Amino acid sequence: MLRRTLRIVIISGSLSLLLLLAVGATLRRPSLGRLHVQTTERADPANLERHTRFLTTEVLPRGSDHPENLEQAARYIESQFLATTSRVSMQSYEARGSEYHNVLAEFGPEDGPRIVVGAHYDAFTLFGDSLPGADDNASGTAGLLELARLLGQVEPSLPITLVAYTLEEPPYFASPLMGSRIHADSLAARDLEVWGMINLEMIGYYTSAQPWSSWLLDFIYPDSGDFIAVVGRPRDSWLTGHVKRAFRGVSTVPIYSFNGPVTMGIDASDHRSYWHNGYDAVMVTDTAFTRNPNYHAETDTAETLDYPRMASVVDGVLNAILQPPGRE
Image 1 (cartoon, rainbow, N blue to C red):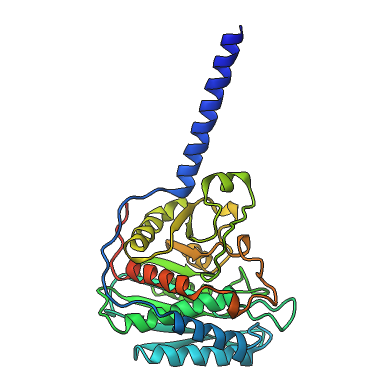
Image 2 (image 1 turned 120 degrees about the vertical axis):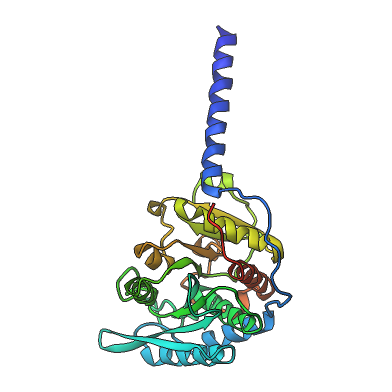
């Protein structure tokens, strides 16, 4: 009887472990290989810091209730884009009586399936006007501007659209007036083909400890916050795999992926707007509030970010968008 009970315990434990490993593999979507580096150009940490400091000190606050500041931020982004390409445009629209702008820069051929890379430049201000929003999301915007500089020095083989969005933060989050929703809707209205969309959402904060909200995530992912994550739905796994292989080819920052259902809360940024329109999209992130204790706080300052690691993340994204991803 004791031997039988022990056998049942061993079998049950083994099956439970196998189930956990299967769940982990499903969420992490392991992929092998790396993509050959397409250019010797590399992101400059000093540029990333310069853009971040401008947005967090010269344009403060950057909330929807300060459209004049968002206008200033948009003009700054426009000027940086124009230094890299002549194909720059403003996508302007009205919300509650004020005018707001997405800023677009185009690279590569004008026709054909395109890759979209975006980041929002507004910041959370519901708790006050002194929130600088360095990681959320001056970091992503700075990464977008550095991508523009690098793309201006190469010749992409496919159309690439960079978009700096406004109105990602509340009270417009998840509404038709999110800047990313305006842009994604416009692509769908023109019936344009999109390879995929990459959303840069908080890419600058790294730490020795990585807190997790559940024991399952703690079991599957590292406990050190020195990595970047690429997040999507199960149907986006081909794109997360492509981004991971691109990172392995050039970036020194470890990268992990998460492909789960939207019900797990993975739609809390601009990529959701492209999902809404039927496009494949992923988010590149430092795991946001899961890792960063400065999230939506006055302490989210430029001094807290790691610019060399941010530069390595930009290098990985650049490598991903310079070569057409193949669906697996």
